[in-house]
Every structure is written in C-alpha cells, then in structure tokens.
Length: 253
Ligand code: NAD
Image (tube, rainbow, N blue to C red; front, side):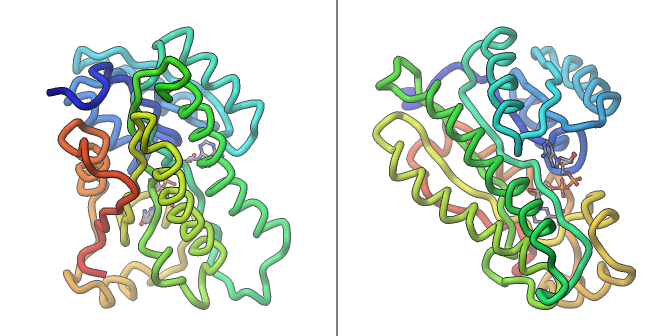
C-alpha cells in the first residue's frame, strides 16, 4: 500500500551549491521534479537545472531570499504555476558567519543568523503545509529540515548564534511533526557534522578544518552526498512511518 503521495515534486532551498545541490542531484536520479531555490547566484542555479534535466526530470530555478516573507510567497506561487503542488520540501538554505564570542555579537548579526536559518524554515514550512495538508485538499508530503550537530554541541566560543538557530530548527521539526502528523505530512531533520562545502570558506577560520577533524571520531569530514542520501531517504516512501525524528550524519560526533 502506498502510504504517501505518489507525486514527486520537491523544493530545495539554497540548492545552487553545497548540500542543497548534491541533494538535488540525488533526488533527480530518483525521479523527482525539482525546484532549485537560490538567493543570488543565477548562473549556478541555471547550470544546476540543466544538469538535473539530463536525468529526464522537470527542473526550474527560482530566485528568492527565503528569509523574506514576500519572496517566499512569490516562490510558492511560481511553484504552483510551473510544477504544481509540491510533495516534498527540503529546508536547507543557511548561513554561518565568521567565528566570534558572544561578547562580540551585534544584534544585527544575531538577527541575520536567526532570520536566515530559522525564520526561513518557518515560512517555507507554512506555505508547504497549507498546500500539502489533507484537510485543505492536499495529498500530504514530507518536509526535511537540515539542522546541524551544532544544535547538540552548542559551538561554544565560535558560533553559539548559529548553534542556537539550529537548536530552534530541531524544536520546530519536533513540534511541527506533531501538529501535522494527521494531515499526511511527515517532518524530519538531518544533522550534518563537518561537511566539505563552501560554507566553511565563507564562515570558517584558517586551520579550522584540521582542528575539527581531530574531534571527529571517524577522523574525517563528510561529503555532501553522504548528507543527501539521508535527506533522500527521509523524503521517500521508504520512511513512511518516520516523523519527528533526526538522522545525524556526523562521523560519530
Ligand atoms: P553552502 O553555503 O554551500 O550552501 C548554503 C546555500 O544557502 C547557499 O547557496 C546560499 O546562497 C543559500 N542561502 C543562504 N541564505 C539564503 C537565503 N536567505 N535565501 C536563499 N538561499 C540562501 O553551505 P552548505 O554546507 O551546503 O549548507 C547547507 C545547509 O547545511 C545549511 O543549513 C547549513 O547550516 C547546514 N550544515 C552544513 C554543515 C557543513 O559542515 N557544511 C554542517 C552542518 C549543517
């Protein structure tokens, strides 16, 4: 018995590079039509769309800053028009700002982290739930929130703001999963550890990679495709009885 929607259309936020881009590749190979959301790198997003179409699926690129409500509304209206109702949402877009202690954190920085990393997940989840909920005539669906092991470790002395935003994602994931469990919608999270992406080029400091590697039981960072595999499983019908749960992809951290 198919316990989920048979429609396979997914929105991935921040999908022009990194974990989002790798997730798009894996999902396209699994037959999903894909909306690649990007904030500013139109060329990378269009390249991604061209690559995804080679798998024989439909793919579109949609610009939106997902921390801004009007952008999110426009994003979902574009999806409705061009791909139809989505069955999956991967909340992935996020930022890490340069390492600092709490004493140096301005309100502007804290607000930037929180609106980008958690307000965006709320806004996109809200629009997805409106469309997926059975009571609204939807067919259900699945949401996967990309969190971080930082939600558990706290990232003291470097990124407590980022870690706090990821902790909020975990609480959103758990609460929303319960709120929509009887609406055919599953909500789960993936907590990556250290993954080799450009996020560390933007927000890291020299030597950070080696320092972190020593603290990882498996003594290596992860590849984006190791995270994408977990996201793909949680989205799929194989995970039809899993909701409100998390997969850590962190080399034992
Ligand atoms: P990345 O910087 O390569 O990708 C993040 C993407 O999100 C970028 O394309 C960026 O433009 C986009 N983005 C940021 N703000 C946006 C906004 N307001 N609207 C639309 N798009 C926006 O980083 P990544 O490593 O691929 O990170 C993906 C997710 O994985 C993030 O949520 C991150 O916190 C999480 N994560 C990453 C690691 C890691 O080690 N790389 C570890 C734990 C969690």
